[in-house]
Length: 250
Length: 307
Image 1 (spheres, rainbow over the protein chains, first blue to last red):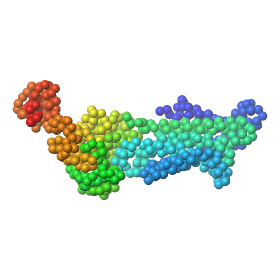
Image 2: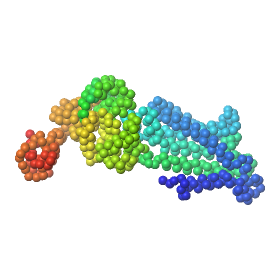
Image 3: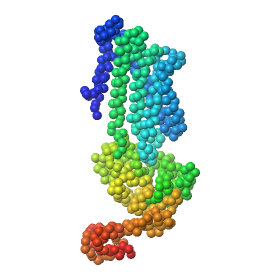
Image 4: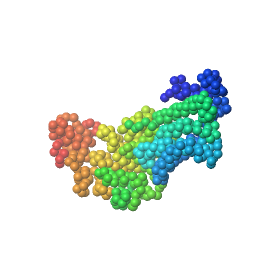
């Protein structure tokens, strides 16, 4: 396994590039001025990119964290005997949640929650629930029947079965769902700027409104790098979780 | 002692075990034998309450299994299954230590117990302790499965076709192991199989089940010599019943002491079937017999086999 700090790690280079642009964007002002004459200022400066990123990451963290906790809890519930009857219902609700465009959720949530970060969190939460629930159910149902049978036969209680067998064996699949959900949420969070949340989408929408293309580029590049970097870190985490345990039995 | 007392079990109104009564004495190797669907696995799983039963009672050492919480009951009973079900995310030591850990044994005691069990199953403790299940062969995995079932020194061992999924050579080795372990530990074992040869080889007592009912209960010899019904005769006999009988008797029972013959001697502890095989191979009707020390003590002839 490759350690994270390895010089050959692509994640490291993406991280370096991302941090450099996050703090060094104002230093690129001459280049933007040269490429887009007539746009002043050439670099978004209503707020620092670091502050935008911090708020953006905070929104994703709160919404993603809540979706992860609720998603796994629901998946655990519907894969126990007691919740089995709710399995179809939960899957359907999660799927409906994802068919709702986040922009529509925002529009509906603003009257209730007002402008600011809260409608964005709600939209990201609803949108992000499906991959987490679906993967968590698939992961929990994919635990080998023989392993569960043996565990039960040896006297593991229902709680011990969940803690020691089901969750550890389902972990890589559950994590893959969280990875998809969070990566999508990082991109989707940008539209929160239309209802007053501070995100890396703010320069994008400012640039679109004021016809300032450099702002759009600056916001978009940072969001993309942030999403790619997060995805890579999740890949590391998955790799680490899978070694050496989840190999198939011979 | 395990007593099944008029036990009944239905699935969807269809009886799978009907009015089953039997008593397995302490230290017995009891094989539940029968064709698929005869209720033998269900019966086994009712003993540790993996399957609830509808009527009757099951008692272990006089205690009703329903008087104990199921988890506590199962921790007192070893359990090994055909699909093994090792925990893929735990190494061998943790797999074996499953029940001791549930029982909160101290760490040092668990370590010593794992060493002891790996040695009992003839696996080198230091090289196997930290392997993961996927690094083991099928036969090694089943050895670990058996070690795990024995870990907390249970009074009773339940085994559901444990050697059904391994190749014939490995199965033969595992059968020898479990016979040796049974002889050494004197644990009561209830063992499910549909393989008559396996049953005859391992059992001290056999229960033959036919559609959820007890068709016959007896020693392997009883069952071969006095089948209680056409079903039992067909099931155990087939076309090789005579050979199976020879397999159950030792040369010592039929040999002629004092006489001598040429050739490599057979052990008096070997079966009559081995004697027949030796005669066939050697194109002779008499072979010498030796005691366990290798000293010649007599001969056995073809006529002695059919006496």
